[in-house]
Image (cartoon, rainbow, N blue to C red; front, side, top):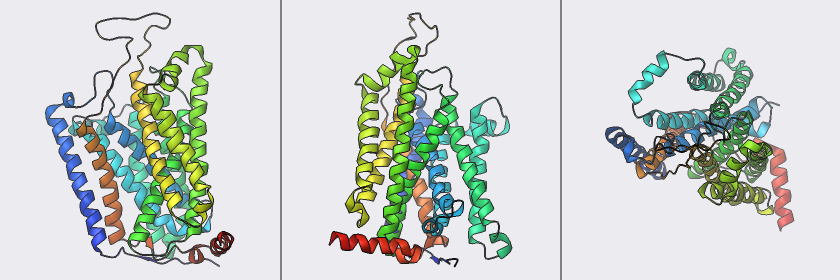
Length: 414
């Protein structure tokens, strides 16, 4: 029998307005930081002529990757027919659009001349992957809105296209993340990039980043509004997060093993992964230890079956580990010198052949946090004005099998 889920607006409570106000303040601070950098120029940032993508790009790329993965939650219910995920479709679609909007806001405000975006939107160089991504980002918004419309419409003639819209959204998100990964994979001038594996690696990263963010916001919204949330559902999502985290780590290992196999790339691999510099620490301690091993231990622990805390903690660590990895990829990849003349030593007054340093400035960090705040604020406002949040996510309401499993685990623990 087909289940009918009920949705209701987020209730007006002090906590809601406090959270929305906090996000608003962070967003305004981010806008002020963007204005400060635009007014004084990039000289007030940590960026240089060699490292032109700084901390704002780290936040922006992380959010863009995560937005694609957040939409995957809806796809699991729509495309793959997994019943427990079906009531999460509306929230997943809205959250995905919100997170992408936050990431693109950072990206646009970090251009130095945001007004020149009009040129990029009206004059296309189709030999550039950046031009392709403009279509992919705008298309993502359109597809997500179409998908959300088919879910929320009361017209049966519209709702019958729900599965088709969900399938299109699933395919588009894969294409979007492939395009984002290809930005780096097709940068043949830089040795740390220039690998086709960046496309599937970014897809795997989107699964883990997106699901982690979705879990955190879902738990916050449901608990903040005092709506039932089942341990069985959260446990299932936590175990899925573990699979995605392991897959993401696998692709990063294949990345450096592939470069290590090629003799011309070995010095670069040694510098980024094994030299003991900040980038090595970010990868091994930030991503592998805190962002991979610790979440795997938490989500598959016995306590995760009857408590939200291990899964929530694992999600937080996954987000922190993800930011560490994106910093490693973007900043670390630029810090290694361009190989202009293979097999030759290059030295000049322009620092050719030198390793480049970067230290993020406060305005850059504030702009990134402001973009994140915008994404959360959009989700809060949408939850208050649209019926996207289920009235209950109790295991018995979502899937009786989850409720049965939870009872069994509680008896076993007792």
